Length: 185
Image (cartoon, rainbow, N blue to C red):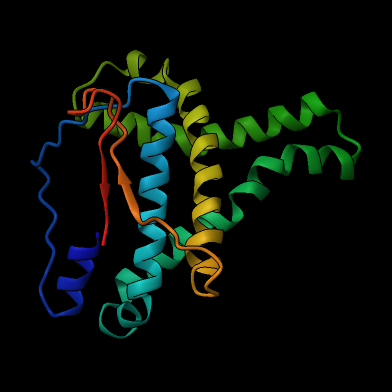
């Protein structure tokens, strides 16, 4: 991300290659999943801190997408709390409030999943049966995104934290056997 944004700020172009395939090595347990998400979220927020000003000037459309991503991170807890707020403020029973929330969320989630399954020629049932896993992933992402926002965009500029300075690979099959640690400059 740092390299791509730096090159775009310098006037280079990034292009979308629809045929590109990236084979992912998924974390094998929750420990490594948490490390991976922490690394991704902290890295994103570090790049926002380092590049947003120049993106606004040189790449305003990219800056808009970055700002929308930050807005999504900031508002995600409100979305997750909305069934409780709805129940408390309207008198709707908690099951009705949750059903409303789940229905709206599914209406927003299903179209991209159906499109992606068809585009990638994946069995639709196999994609849809994994929807509960998407909610667990979203919950972990919200926690680490907020941690990254607070640390990288608030505490680091105030010199109250160092931020992400150690790159800890979140894979069990790393050379050391339980995750390689590499110091970042």
